Structure formats: C-alpha cells, structure tokens
Length: 343
Image 1 (cartoon, rainbow, N blue to C red):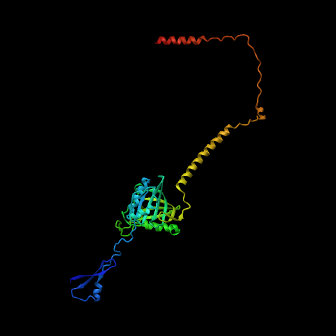
Image 2 (image 1 turned 120 degrees about the vertical axis):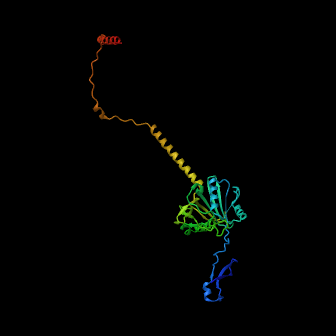
Image 3 (image 1 turned 30 degrees about the vertical axis):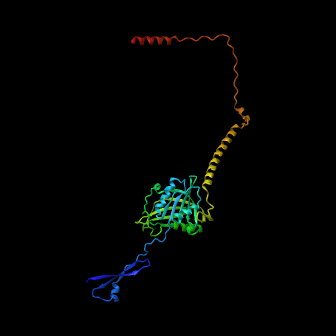
C-alpha cells in the first residue's frame, strides 16, 4: 500500500515556515479521523533562527612602548575572543577619553586597553564604552601561549564557559567586575566568526586580593581540564563610574604601586649595606682601643726555682790542641788505591 506525503506550512516568528508532514492513505480517508492524527507528525522548528542579536564587540589595543610579551598577550586574547577587534597603538601623549571616540569609530562597546609605563609596568583598562563603568588593573605574572607550551588545545572561535570564584558574589565591587567580565569575555551567540561548540573554560579566581586569569580545555572523555593559556594576574587599583574616568566607585586600599615596591626594595638593600659598614666600624674601634695592663699575679713566684751560682774562672793559658786521628786518613788512602788498581 503506497502512501504520499503532503506538507503544510505554518508561520514562525522569524518569518520561516515550520514543516508539517501528514500521512494520507490512498483510500481517501478524511484528515479529521483519529487514525490520521496518530500518523501525522510535525518537525519542530529550531530553538533560535540563528540571528546575531547580542552584538558585543571588544576593542583590544595598547599604547606605545609596550614590550613584546604584551603584544603576544594581546594576540592571544584576540585569538580566543572572536568578537574582538584590533587597532593601531595610541600615542602616550593622548588623553584616555580619546579611546571612547576610537571605540565609536570601530563600532565597539567594550574595550581592553593596555597601558605601559616606564617600559616596566603594564596596566589594563576594562571599560564599557561610552557610559561606563571602567576598572584599572595592574597586570602581573604574564605567560603567553607560546611561552607556556601547554598540552591543551581548543577550537579557534569556540564559545567559552566563564567560571567565577564564590568571592565575586560576596563583595559588591567584585559583583560589578563579574558582570563586566561576562559582557567582555563571553562570545555572543551566533557570532559570524564563532563556532557552535563549548570546549574550553575561562576561570577568574580571587587569591591574595588579586584576580587570577586561567584558560582550560575540556576533555570530552573524562571532562578533565588541561590548561591552554594565556595566564596572568590582575591587581585591582580603582573602579570608575564613567568610561576611562569619572567618579571613583572603589579604590583598593591594599594596592601598592610598583614604584613604591621598588623603592622599598632599594631601601632594604641600602639598610643591609649600612648595617655591614657599622659592623666593620665597630670592629675597627674595638681593635684601636687601648688594652688595660694586667697586674701580675702574686702566686706566680711560687713556681720560680733559684739557679745555683757558678764561680767565675779566667783562663790565662791557651787550650791544648786536639790530637789528629791519622788512622782514618790512612784507611781512606788505602781504599782509594785498591779501587784504582781494580780498574
């Protein structure tokens, strides 16, 4: 018994039609019968029509004077964030509020700006452009992908899982940072450059009043984690209400500037040198001091023994000459003569 299929279209919110398939026998039975209702099945529409609605774009660039390690770190962040965009380096003489105009030109609403000072210290700004808020961090312990040589690997452009420490839900400033990190580092769904897979985890952990950034791969066999990289540590300095400025929302009282830290190290080294010099001077002063005379002990005379006096004799005559032993000379002469004869 052959059957034929007839499709019915139904409108969906996205404008597409859902396929409705109905099985009808050749006998010409009515479509309202219960038997046909049992044979009828509907193909469900997709959960979403694949439209890119959350159009978050992140601008990642830096100021002039950054080191090669910072350039590699920016390149690593761009590779794991498909919704990121790059720009040329900004001159150090320009003010920070100019970055809002750059974000508007690049059609970006988030920004990661790396600022280098003295070619030693690296600061990172995370900002929601142009209305704020923004946060300034000191970046420490940077390790890039090429440097770590980790065994983990993930698909380029895949969407990450963001894992946060429980501390982010306890403190208000950490809660604000959590929302800022979610909007910055999470890949928007159905982004044109993203992949529809979730195979790596980005973790934010608070240890020693610092935020530790790590990137791990999810292994499918046993759901274990293998670190991919990059890795770095963020030390929070200030949080502002506006983008790259404005009223201060939070200031870290435990933060110590790198200049102050280096100054304390130099002062500690100078204190150690001064201490060694003082020790040497004290030793010289002790050696130069006049030693007090030691009074002789009265009991030392007990061990003195008298020496008997010998009479003085004056010799008026010369001493007698000693007798020479001629026998030895004779024996030597005889021995030499016998040796010569043998030769």
